[in-house]
Length: 92
Image (cartoon, rainbow, N blue to C red; front, side):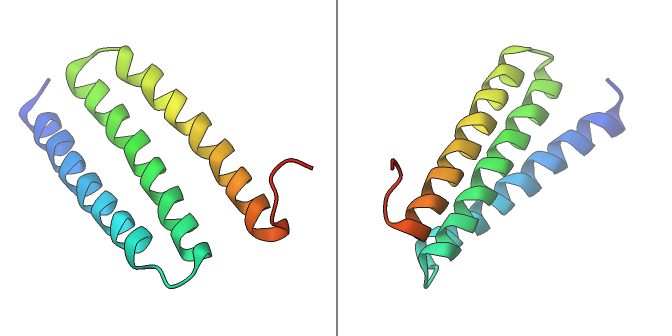
């Protein structure tokens, strides 16, 4: 890899960690449950992207599979939490 690509990936990782910190702040500080759900969404999306960038850096496919699992579980958990917040129950 070229030096520019290495530094770009490193900068992307730093910015994604900062974005994850902002999402954690929203989860902890959010005044309503909906704000916390949005923070959780941002957290899992940033975690997925961080794993993908880390997989690009190490050229390992294991990180891509882990990112796929996190994305699937994050989507399902968001749908379950949204349904719970709307109706008060997940399973009807």
